[in-house]
Length: 500
Image 1 (cartoon, rainbow, N blue to C red):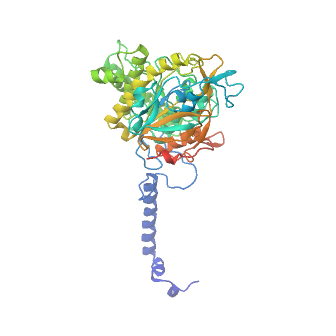
Image 2: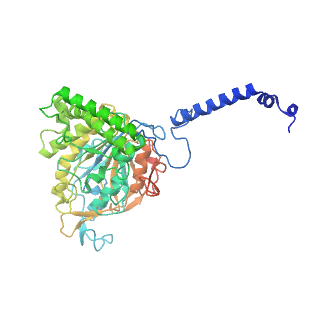
Image 3: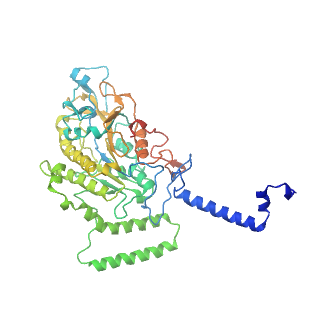
């Protein structure tokens, strides 16, 4: 046994029963306090998730799955707007200037394969619209999109995007869920799963569908996949509000309110019997949110308070009916972001059966007419939305993403009037919180046929979007069927060059 006289004064003090109990009590309390501070991300110099490795699954209160949660690290972006254009916008006719196509217009070339997605191709074709330098940065944008061309000093282009598929349904799935197959969570679902929402009276994730209907992959583009159902997107638009929000005329406001209060009490008692049932708690939370939406959704959808100048700038009047409806959707997107909705996904294009340029950007024939028709709908309202968000200060804390599933070929199809699918090179752009302005990343080759520098995969793209939202794409996971699932699977690198 150790001689007490050989111990240090500190060690000898621990042999005293009162001193030992006092020290142990203070130590235990200190450990508990440190654990509580760490779980809330309040330790000095530490993010909410201090571990250096391993998966991070957000701590979700089953009684309130939408409550706001801290990101993995601090970033300026708190919300995200995704503007998605189904059908594959032609990068070489919009944002990716290739003068070589004009030089070789009408000629054959070794780059032309014997067959593409829809059959034998034709010859090299110059852009169908003239390109001009825009803004102070001088970025070349075609006359097809003159309004967005005025925004280039605030945009960050990615010109070397690639994808793993040349089919629209799989391309939409891949871009919006990180997988070509169906049944996987959408980007918006992953973000709301991780971060919840500041708005408790509106959904955390709203999908604003095109006035013409759903895109090719339908609700899979904004679905929850294997994540809890609470994180799927709620879809409605300015023309079609959510169903069943209006109180029946035969039911008075007092009776309606009393019914809701009774249901809340009954649900609470039922939940007490099954305290560990997260699905039940989430279902009750969804029903309660639906009740609050009876007031909040009509308010946010009421555009009567918008000024005449605002409606004119967005293009609600003066163009086609479809442009007017899409313009209203753009205003609705801004209003939802102003109310604190975490993720808004705005679609420009539709048709689950395929549109061939009529209901979306899929221009296999007569691209001069069909792309012009889609641009008339999309260009002015989208540019007005970006400018309006900037003027209102929304871009200081909102990331904006403009995307499509792949590009189009630098040569014509056999019919001589359209361009086929091109998964080897296309363009997307970002703007807003955390993103460089007036910047271009990556290059396609001289024809816009394949990537030439800084190739960007869809995995890289999604990894970067999550990073801009303060989320580590390698650690944000959900355990499903024996695997720690991620939006980016086991791939993806953050594109640090585009970060402000």
